Length: 520
Image (cartoon, rainbow, N blue to C red; front, top):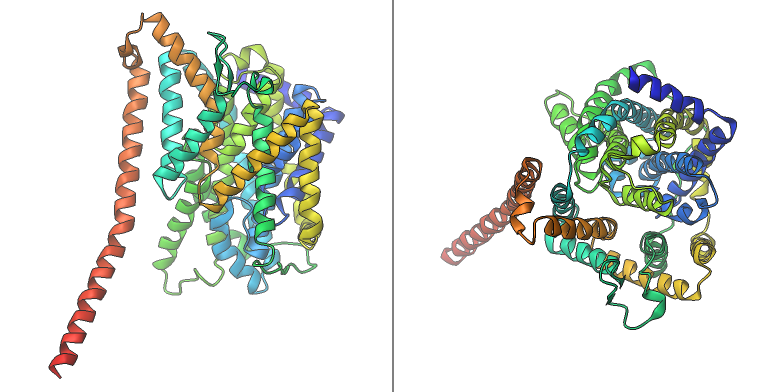
């Protein structure tokens, strides 16, 4: 009952005219940025991060919630219409969604995505309301050893799952940890990796890293491929997206199954919603294969409904992990954590006690944002599709200027602009060589937290390293981590085995054929 009363109090704060305005603006801006080719929900949050520091914390995070969920819808819109997903979580939506668009069913595809996002997001918001306080109560038992285990779990799990190469994931994590330790050590006062540059004594701002790697780095990538990538052609008609009764009830089981798959992945640090969206798509494909007339590959509505619901369900419960544990499970969640830290707020078990108005107002805004997005994006989908027609030679230079203005507005430092450019080149190189960005962001955000807790644990135990294994919670996390590593190794071995068998079979077949020819 206390949770219901707290949520009602959150609605009382979120439904004020100014906060309703921030929800509406966030949904509009998030969708507008998400539908632009090459951009996405992560970049939408990154671009707006420097511009929200003039707002009060509650208004700023309500705006972020709208941007976050609106950007996810924009990701799916581009995945469906142009086969260019704005983020990895929308890749699974391209398989059947773009096939529906090519078959002249773009309005139905967008309606399927919008309703799936609403169902997944709304159900996950309900789960967050009841899950986040329970997680916060659990995390109140966490000490330095538990937080070290939790951070290590996030590091290894994210690095090993989000990248095709574990080495690439660990390299990205190492870069993030390396950037996080630049500056003066707060305990010993020692300079670390500053090269004697005074501007680096305070370290490198997480806002600068976020905007550089996620936004400006993408601008450089698009510029490098401008002559090789064909122009996008919109397939959206002027009709308002809608589903018939038959199509709705055909997609309904897939929405429910996708939501069920996505919910638990919000509190598991596996890089965001990419894994559950593929799992949801694979499940629907297996179910479809048992039918007499399989539809997958030709624009099956269930193949789009399931990953859309799974992705948004994961995003919702990820906020529970962020608010209650201070644990970001994706790059976008890491940006949100950076925003909390910029306001001097540390998510975790004490957040619900120290800032209840902020937390419950933010949770209430999730429900409002879902309704606003459903009401806005169905009739405005043709307009969002028109934004994709903006020529790249105008769009991306504008984004670059916006990045520079945002960083200069927050620091008023020319040095930060040079740092922005240098880190943007790093982000471009990471994209060029297939190194994932999420481990870098999570490493930079959680690196200082892990360092502080390692020191606290060793100081409290007199330098005894067994303190890291003295807690049942820490041991449980290490056991789960070992299971994740084993699962990843088995999965990668299986993914390589068919290729080797196929190569060997082909080689043996060629040998037999060549031998037969020689005998002939």
